[in-house]
Image: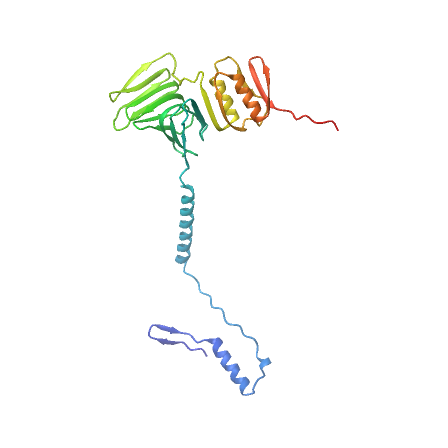
Length: 298
């Protein structure tokens, strides 16, 4: 008979496995039983039932760790890229993650992320640049030394040199301009331009939005999509002609190229030579296609 002995607050239970081994050892020693007559006895498994509160606490800990890991993994800051145009003649052209295009003038510096945040598209500019901003629900913000500019989708030119010299002209759309360190805000619509005069805004109107003088000019594309190169060339063309891609798949071809905006024939020759294309004239349009590979007769 198993007895349970209470010693104060301690509860003691007999070890049945140890007692069984002692009994069988004594029976074999006294010659009362043979060893092979003793059945195998496995140790009793004791099961403990965990309290429900401990199970719930464990689940909460696992959930907390999982959520924390997900937040950390999704809060990695974007990679910041910096483009600095050290050339005295070329405009450097780059496409941003949202499809917007920036024409960075000589001696200009642009800092921008490789991917924009979900609530805002923000970058920094020092120098001159022309922007073609894609329409998006996220505001597009440009920070200069003295001014903060916010747009949605438009085309405009910024000239920012130091804390005082600032000028902005709008080609299309509307731009909001805020002077840092003050409450001076102004909206600039298409066909108007503003500049800082003794710390205050001055606004003037013109027939059309001012764009940087790129006619003729030298443009530099670095690892840019062919579709974007063609779009910019057509936009800045001084003639009635245009370029067009005739084959699917050419749009995503990338190229580093320096061209003159006023020389379409030279641009076509460079594109054909670099990418192995052929050019066909169709009225005022030049169509670029993949060059067919000549097969030798078998």
